[in-house]
Image (cartoon, rainbow, N blue to C red; front, side):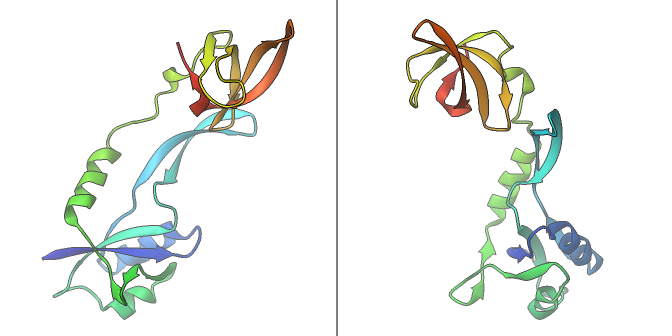
Length: 164
């Protein structure tokens, strides 16, 4: 019967570890999510690790390599452990992650159009109406608010605004 474990990998070497583990006939699950980023001023969709530096592996203890062999695989640091023993991840968690991975959570149409009026719900400008200008990275937006009869450009966290 297959059991799932969690491996901690060297920084930025999850893909390498996955490749070397798969070469040893070890089942790997490396969940990735597609996110929109602004790279050099252009909007791009890129794949990023859902859990950076971690890989789930499925092992059948009767046929799999030893824990020592797995730990010495290129890119792998060690098993995630509790009480000195490698933590066995519930199969239900892996199944839920695989189901969620198939859904596209990021919908680019959710961003307001430039010039659209939005409301700031929290933060230092809470309660103000603002005019959406453009995104500023992944988590902020540039807005125009009116202060003392003058429009001021501000950067606000996307969690602090309500799109109408």
